[in-house]
Length: 301
Ligand SMILES: Cc1cc2nc3c(=O)[nH]c(=O)nc-3n(C[C@H](O)[C@H](O)[C@H](O)COP(=O)(O)OP(=O)(O)OC[C@H]3O[C@@H](n4cnc5c(N)ncnc54)[C@H](O)[C@@H]3O)c2cc1C
Picture (tube, rainbow, N blue to C red):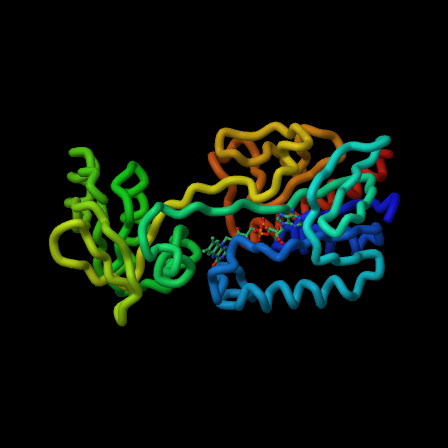
């Protein structure tokens, strides 16, 4: 397909909303979705008014039903493999061997998480283990909650979970907290286990934490910090400016450093933030802003 108004790469909340906004403005758009969503491990998404507790797959199905009302929008469940500027437009190569050409490009490919390297953790991520108290804190209300790692974030996370958890334990994993942190945790009534963590396994209470030595700990919830990285190579292929977080630098209109290319969702944020405000709602909102900016940009020629 040639001369589309836009190609949106990514079928998570950012890309789905961008496609909806473009469709409502009768712009020709193809949305590409390789089917790998950041919140794939979870059964319920939270903290989005009207969608609180909804299955993410159902959220996407509802979004596809919305898009079906707009005849200028096509959805293709195929991965993009390469993007490049081409004669004043953008050419997008697809995994099925075909290609698209569009006047504007919206990148909404998200990020991928890497968990701390601990046996059993991956099986718990998204249910008993989580990385975001805004998404999962309430689900652990009243339970014994563990926080893996005694880095600088531990006291803030403990303070956020203080009013929610029944009891908190920092799993320092062989790295004793510095005296200032130890003091802050002790003042807040947070226990610290300093032994190296050997692994996790699901249990009746939630998870059982085993250590290199000493008794196991039963917890009802666990917070971990993930490392995240771009899930697609397009920022690199296009030479877009990145921020120290590894995300694409965008301005308030989701414009990247390359004219005609917009980015929305977890893969991008404005420079004033240290990292993306990762959530379904903020990603959808960014998709709306990006698509609105695409429409204005198309009007400009
Ligand atoms: C365990 C977990 C739980 C979470 N829980 C919540 C919660 O309860 N509430 C909440 O608000 N947020 C939650 N989040 C955060 C939320 O999932 C993300 O902020 C949100 O999904 C980001 O949306 P996005 O559209 O940027 O990216 P994603 O949802 O990750 O979507 C990326 C899209 O890009 C596509 N893609 C990638 N590469 C290509 C390619 N080469 N070609 C074509 N398509 C491609 C993918 O297939 C996918 O469609 C959670 C995150 C995690 C990890």
